[in-house]
Amino acid sequence: MAIRVQLDRILLERRMSLTELSDRVGVTIANLSILKTGKARAVRFTTLDALCRELECQPGDLMTYEPGPSEAHEED
Amino acid sequence: MRALGPGSVSSFLKIILDVIYVGLWVWVSLLAIFTVAVLLLSFNPELITSKLHIGSSIDELISKGPLFAGALGAWALLSGGWMVIVERLRRVFSTLTAGDPFHPDNVRRLRVVGLVLAALEIGHYIFAALAKWLAPDTKIVDGSFSLSAWFPVLVVFVLAEVFREGARLRREAELTI
Image (cartoon, rainbow over all chains, first blue to last red; front, side, top):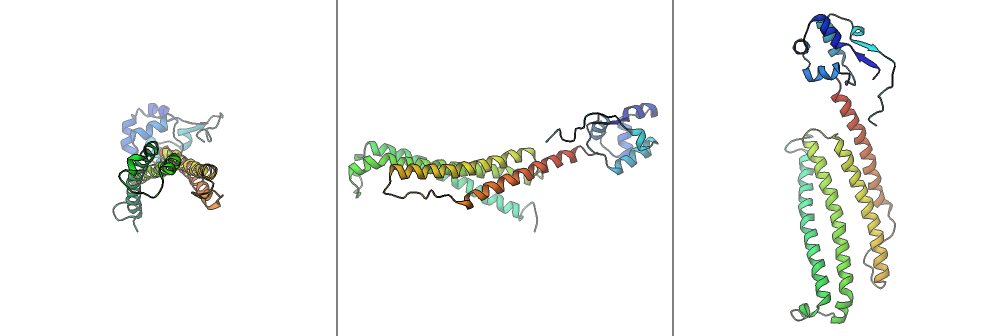
């Protein structure tokens, strides 16, 4: 996936654990792990809103685009 | 009308499928027993003619016995094919009642149903050709091409593709945070 999620870095900067973020945003640790490891296929605006609110950041801080092979059709 | 649970269309269909499945088991078992019995009696017709006063002569029974057994065996095979279809449909229904109709396995199950339907139709032609060759004076089955028999095959393969897309969307939904 060409989209890289920078959740690890932001959590480290905020000195916040994944469990704490999970409690604050109401997303399970399993789902946050999927997001953190770059396995997620889509992010809801409500989730993004909660993440940005609790991490005090912009959506662009959470995600960056790095040109690479697309995985859009890898499961077809 | 409710989609799931007691009194729903799916529960009604599930009962029908269960009844058909059990009925087919009994039917196939009986056919298999009859096939073996006819085959054995064709080798020793005195077994039946000594007990029952049947119209046909011993020679006719000896000559037609294997043919009858073949016809019954083919019928049992055909019924076995229907059993495979009903069994797969039952499994598809179990995923529906579990609330997960777009399970990836259902795509394979529907494809199997389509393939078995096609195989049954081809087997029907082969059986008709063999019957015509072995017993030209009797018309056991009609082996003419029927478009209405092939249409369900097309429908099932189209549905399998729809389920494939459904399974992909399900996977996407699972990975949506």
